[in-house]
Image (cartoon, rainbow, N blue to C red; front, side):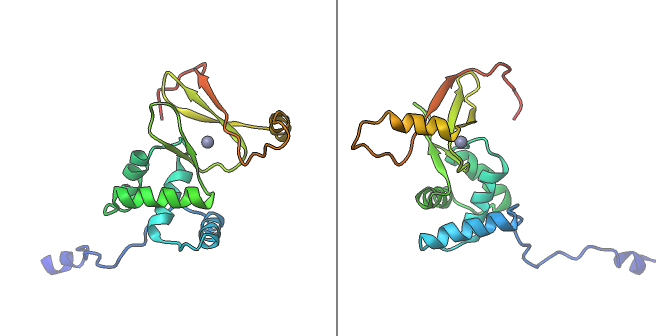
Length: 165
Ligand SMILES: [Zn+2]
């Protein structure tokens, strides 16, 4: 009888389990394309870090990305996460978001948008910027001034301060 029961023992899985990076095919293709344009390769680490940014779009800091990425890849180092983020920024895949006295945060939203920082919670929200607003802003520049990017930050409070998330 014991022998029969032994058949149900779970055999330890020695096979390397592929990491679930939660990237869709399209997101993975976009990542690969942006990296290869910059002469960089797609690595598992980069996939995981990019996936972390896309999964929870709350403008995490390097430390927050690091904590989340380690859930998929415990051996990942902070330096690697930092390097991945730097690479994404240089490829134009991710924007840095800087607010006074705060560590840099990272945003994967590539559509024109401003940021709203809730001073009560520290949360950063994306605020869509319609093209006509951007045109108006650009028209304010004196002739001879060319702009590559416009950064707009709102500071204030949201009506309801969600404690969750
Ligand atoms: Zn953003």
